[in-house]
Length: 245
Image (cartoon, rainbow, N blue to C red):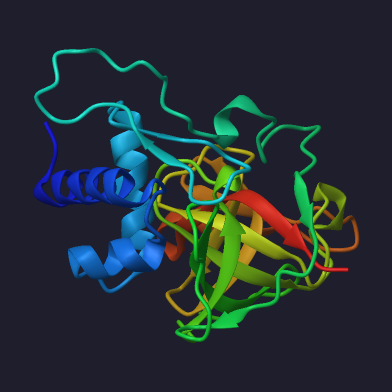
């Protein structure tokens, strides 16, 4: 069963493919569905992939393929193409080494240039997050950064620029851009964005110890901070990393 927006998007993509021979851009899909954000289109596409209605060929621009339409009796010919962090080493693993996408991933101001094809998506770039001492809670600056879709699985994502060196032993350096899957859940050992006392935010490894939460750095020069559980809220977990040279 598809939602109304999922159904509308699938029919729009199918119509566009039949008329032009290639899939529509994220901007075209956003306008067709009257959505305010391209991240909403990404979530709809991911949902359609999971349900076997769409397939996406990574490493090719604007390469969406309609596998079937609602009401088709024929089962999907292709498996949904999803790249998930669950099949690779996790941030909580002892030997975790993040996959780094190298290149010039300069932040784009919203509206200046957005992701123009299905090979990338513009994620909100909220600002700098301390990987050393916590900083004031981040606010949406309106900036965006283009991220390869191959780095993302399902769910809502956002990007943060790292400031500090407290996570260097986890392969996260000052100036890196981390990709965060939004959510309040995280397992012990995973690297998370933690909101402290509703006003400070930091990137650390999470450890639950009874009724307390420890936020561990990955640098022996920094100390672990321990808080009562009610003072810490998880705002997302690390799923990817970008690095500029």
